Amino acid sequence: MPNVVVVGAYLRNTVVTAGGVEHRLGGIHYNVRTLAALLGSRYVILPISCVSADLLTEIAADLGQFGGKIGFEGLMRVSGPAMECELIYDESGQRERVLRHRPPQIRALPREGLSQTVALMVNFVDGDELALETLHEIRSDGFAGLLYLDLHNLVLMQADLRASSMFSEIIAASNEADFVQMNRVEASAVLGLDDFEPGHIAREIDRIGLQPKRAVVVTLDKDGVYCRITAGRPHHYVIPGERVQLKDPTGCGDIFSASFLNSIMDGIPIGESLVAANKAASSNGLNINVKTKE
Image: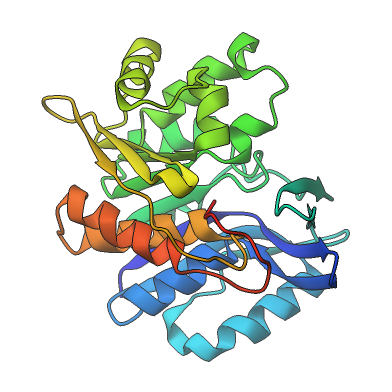
């Protein structure tokens, strides 16, 4: 059966609020579960990640409910403690995010497995999961499937991204992809914007040469989604925000990307896919009183 590959870090989230402390799986966990629920009847979802032994046991137990919809051969056991992300919420719902115990970088992807891959999603949860040159290699090796990048901590790890040599590498890697996704904070680092008026976003995307094969997607919390179409004649979509009472924004961006990819693979037009993905992400909530989605 053909597969959809998800590359990134699995981690254990430690959520700290005034009401107490809660532990749960995070990282590409949200992408994998959502894709399995949406695509599992037609594709095997194959996560590729370096995972500690204790976390691997926890992941296998959680994903076992999906049966054959998820393959585990891409989960590589490594020594050391599990990767952890501490999410500390204040009374207003703002949070501080701290990553600990980063796993080894993935220097290569299994070429044999990719021969059956129709879509490859890379979520830079850690920021250093996958060597950027690997993205060039898989394209040069003939991978013709959909390539979806969520830049995430790939840019947030850089103290001053726009002044670093990493900036041009990120742009070059992004331009290997079909779709590139970032949120407001990540877009601030990449585009150097404080004002997210659609025309300003479009101008900066064009100015820095961010040209994935199909589109750049910027999720803007309660203000919705901006999408710059980079294929053919450049134009954009602006999707209004969903006004909902969310309990916890953790994982909303991952659910957005998985839902959007599912719609695109079903042949649904990009505008309709954006609306559906935004609704799916906005409806995600667990147990923290936060009003806007991430």
